[in-house]
Length: 262
Ligand SMILES: Cc1cc2nc3c(=O)[nH]c(=O)nc-3n(C[C@H](O)[C@H](O)[C@H](O)COP(=O)(O)OP(=O)(O)OC[C@H]3O[C@@H](n4cnc5c(N)ncnc54)[C@H](O)[C@@H]3O)c2cc1C
Image 1 (cartoon, rainbow, N blue to C red):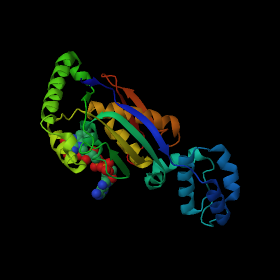
Image 2 (image 1 turned 60 degrees about the vertical axis):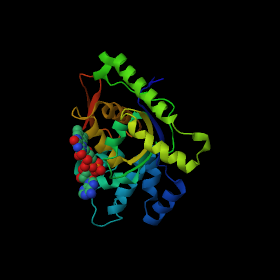
Image 3 (image 1 turned 90 degrees about the horizontal axis):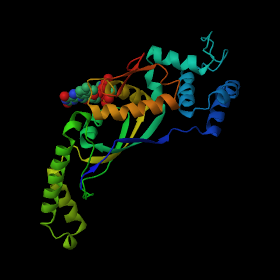
Image 4 (image 1 turned 180 degrees about the horizontal axis):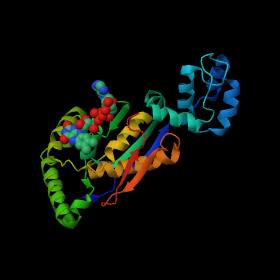
């Protein structure tokens, strides 16, 4: 039977600092004073790694390390805000977040794969996985016709299982099953629920939030990236502090950065 499902976002992983490593780097760089002063006040590993990487460029851990530097931004917020303002986004690529996008459609996955720079993706395979049922999120624009949608999906599901029954699965090798499963998926709808693991660096995440929560983007990807934006603004306040939000008529939220495409 068709299962009505909701797209879900789970944060799975994020970049972690190796404390011994940063101590060694700081001692080689003459930046131990800076490390001991700043690290306790900035325990967020992603933001700390990005700041550390950026400061390495000019040895701007303190005055005296680089004779050309006569003034430094002391605190992390000022430093990272300046990075965003100048558009020095490449250092944001040092830290990543991994999300599970569950119960998203193949409409969604087809769109998210268009963002290639700074991403890694692993999607549930419809060559290997033979679905027992079609899970489908009913978008708000179809809510008034939701019983008709269910009926249509149930019909496709029935036809799928009729076709599936034409094959003697118990006598097939794994390779044969894979080939037929892959052939059969062609009659499944784009809206069928799937699962995707998505890793992206912070430069990319900022860009995709901006693009995909824009009112002109598709409603499902907006719904998913609203959740991504909420997590990132909560967990990385200095990297996403310039985003403002605006509620849209359909209940989704648009997130717009002050500094676009850093
Ligand atoms: C509202 C909306 C509607 C859309 N409609 C369509 C549509 O109808 N048809 C369609 O085909 N697509 C459509 N797209 C997808 C769109 O065309 C892009 O492919 C997608 O948004 C990926 O963004 P990006 O090009 O910024 O790439 P990303 O991979 O996100 O890259 C980020 C940035 O890195 C740089 N970059 C990445 N790769 C390269 C490269 N190879 N060379 C140089 N610079 C690079 C660019 O500055 C790029 O903007 C739509 C997207 C949106 C948001």
